[in-house]
Length: 266
Length: 277
Image (cartoon, rainbow over all chains, first blue to last red):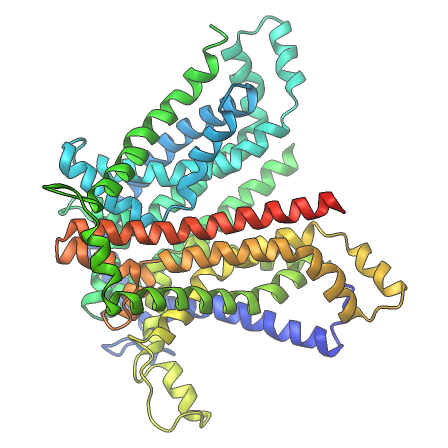
């Protein structure tokens, strides 16, 4: 550390950093802790200690159904985004053709487009054309939002990939397709997995497109929580949110554990 | 065959983008500027002659500036310390920074709502500290939206800046110090100067996300802290005035694009300046 943490500047930076972490974690802590209180309303810090709101949340079929809707849409969107993104990234890094840079810019552009603008455009589009039905409207929207994430993660990974490995496989008689699946894919897989996981999380957490495009009878979990929060402050909504936070934490730890196991094996 | 390989590979992606991204955006643009008789700017006129909408645009930009300022104030020191720390806790803390990003903005805004209500923790803390002498309502105010949205976007600022600080060689700071600069001067003259491009990039990212955010302003701000995003939703979903919603969406898009272009121009200007040195 160049800056002494005991100097006034160092102390100021430490204080601001501590503030930043407190600030980042406070609302998440609230959502997990508030439903533990046994008052009928939400309070933080919670008064008393009960698990009844958490139990109620687990038994509420509304949230369970919404969770399944969200999971299904996120899995389908992530798989499609992965397939579209990886094949496009491969074309963009492996071949040189006119308009390649423009195409890359277009493929990444949904990252700067406000999701709300996309949602309004897609709603109008689906109403006018009558294309797609049921959950597929939302999947289409999520694929557009998620593909740039897959691209952004897999483009640098594919660029770094040593192409002589692939050429060696081709010289040994592998077809281009076989060379891709046997040589390229195993090497770039961590990047592709990371991109797909990012796509899954983006779709799972996304609320704006879901508000516009989800089937009225089958809202996703973020939409269900959004509507419930707007209606009132039931402790059970907080409990559902709390469970979601804990599940996310578990998911993140598991992902890192698997990641470090994978790295130590290589 | 080999000549068509790249086309075959990017065609599915290009097709999906053409149908579900470019076409809908083009028809959105068209809808905002047409009526039965043909081309019209009536929807835009409605926006620009009404001071109510000017105020709303101003409020939206103010939200963007305030959120960017808060995330810079907290993000710069945090990212710097995390990038320079050799402790094994640094990677754990970085992971802790990404965690809130994985939690839906709806859930995080909900956490703030519990704190913001009249008898919530924030109000009680301010009372106990003697800063206010009567309970304050932060819910349904712009202050509440700014506090909540800055938390939602802070991880992105920290992660962007962390990458920037990591890429700046710390030996440069030592070199400046060995030439007699005080640590704070070395930091200001060397590191922050080299990082300024990244700091601008992070700020523009946070700014454009802040002015287009919907979930947090809608939940924490409600009807009283109306911004562009909530107005678009209201026009489209509640009032079913789609042409006006399309015009509002286009205006928001233009602002966001202008921010992105400014960012691109800034980067290019910087590159030119470097090249001419």
